[in-house]
Image (cartoon, rainbow, N blue to C red; front, side):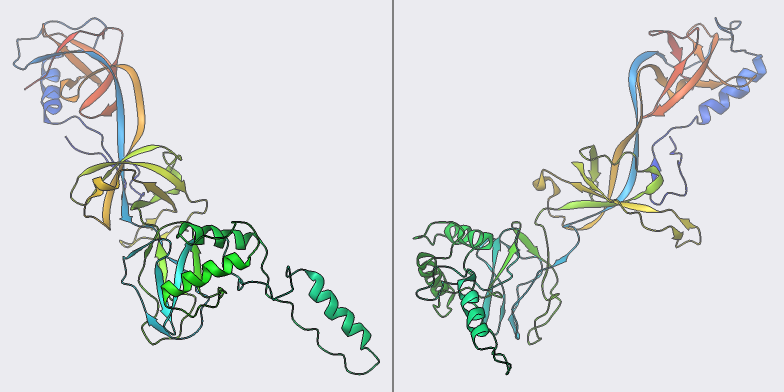
Length: 395
């Protein structure tokens, strides 16, 4: 059985179809010599021929198509490192990190991973003694003092308000602190003395000065566990935004699907992924890119079709085994013909006057129309074709 390529311009795309082989070619010669036709109820009887007989069956045929994909952990994203200084420690690429782990050390000070959606954009600490909030009271007082001193001379600078201690970022931090086992405060939007005491205990465990204040570069937030990518700096370098990239911790597959033939890529659609060792695992379409890559020249001098990235998830990560990256093949359902009459492709014969037919057990032939080819079977129809009809497979 030979695969017919469908959409030859689509990169890495192969369609599992079947064609009529040597048996059909032989049948053409025999049918032509005997003058066999494809009439509705059969043709004159032919001399007995060898070969087994099979019944016409009713079934659903499914055309499965494959595309090439790449197994990995997804694209690397740089962590938003806000610390400043010299990198003094880095984790190995591929290391998994969770809440409370040290991501890197800058000036020998740890930057810790916490979970959350808000970035760390300011220092968090207790309000100065006698101040209940970083509200506008201090700022307003400073502004009033400035107004009183305006006399046409140089204006005095307005003093900075105390560190902000109220907001959703405080609640996010306190949620993490409590999850790490440091309690003694109410998880809310206010950084209290109880929060500061818990922070001091946390800082002691990290070997940091126990200030009760969290610096903007002390923590980095992510949505959950991460896998460290290849660092963008080396020990002794100044830390920067691209110092430490990361990915998720689950393996997935990315397919560059032809933009003109990506109708199969519907979120939630089931696919079969064949790993580099041909082991099949189940996957599902998780997302489809909304922007296609531009078409261009291919490596063999031909035109490369525009593609869109399709991300596939694998629920059973254990089924992937040792593989962390590499080329894979993704098989998905293309066309489908439900509840149709089918025969093995090998049962088809070519008729002298053109078209295809089936040889009945008594040696007569009936003409058929062919439909979908898939998995070694072919859809057939015609006035003389019925379910259970015995047809011969030529030898």
